[in-house]
Image (cartoon, rainbow, N blue to C red; front, side, top):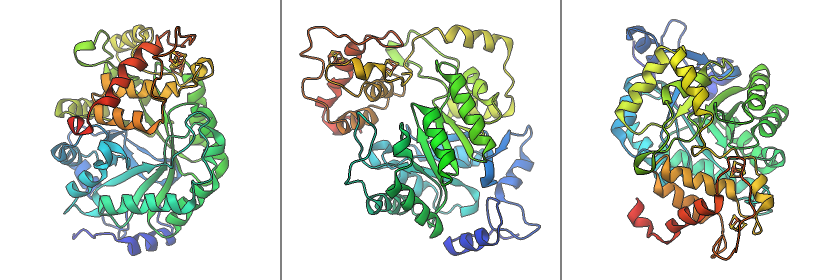
Length: 401
Ligand code: SF4
Ligand code: SF4
């Protein structure tokens, strides 16, 4: 069998023909993934991404923290054919790195998800008048160019935490038109906090096909997220989980270690989660993810570890937002805590600096408060963490590449 390359025209043809599968194939043809699967000794687990009909490995490679094309190749060769990125990752170079790595691979052998958003009000999460349909369409076109692709499989409206922004018409129109034009196959939305509200908005919109939400055993509102995810799956949306490890601390500052294997398995016990994004950066971590896909059962020891680990404060900001109202300067503390996690959890200083610089913070944030009234749900002394991470603002960006 010769494998067909699928271009935008073929893709449109397959969509209009009502073929819900991953690629446009003749009746008896098998996808490269199906053939690869047949060769694998112990099979990886797959789940169907809602009404998209796409069958995905239960763990997806999150490419956010790596600039290593060899790792992307290794993941693809091992059968992790769904890659997740965003326009801003790796200082805007991640999509291009992946696009280069994919050269020469048949288009039906991988799936790409990427994301973008427009600048919003960091305090309210709402979009200003300058956020237009055209501006968002330009983002989609930039992603297509960087990835060197005719179409993108899932395009996510990124990092939304309020209903009104999830339903922001200019962005939804842009995504719908891109889908109709064959530039993207499915429309998604991502949410790192206030997830249940955003997921409900996605269901109500009848525009979004996939939700990508933070979901982990350390979330104090994990039951609410679980319920929302269940409703999304029942409504036919594809459900993708992220932040499943819940903010481990690495390196010299590490006093607490979470068993990544146990945390991944915890999220996979929920069958409404169709795939998890795991942002691995080493071959060992990749192998751990592959092993989890072949054995998802939680052992007694792993369950006991998770019970203990829920008591650790770690690096995971619950995104409850109560700190923002208490802060005299109304700083976007959840975003600052995310930057802190990028530094001490992901060791991705570039991403942390980019995030900090995007927040339009006052020059003297925290320095000129005589005391801090903020009571964090995690009992963190947030002002200490803010002062620590803000030092990155002064570091020349070239040192962090
Ligand atoms: S110390 Fe920082 S976090 Fe606390 S109130 Fe002042 S600006 Fe807000
Ligand atoms: S109170 Fe603490 S846990 Fe809640 S959003 Fe603020 S920093 Fe995060």
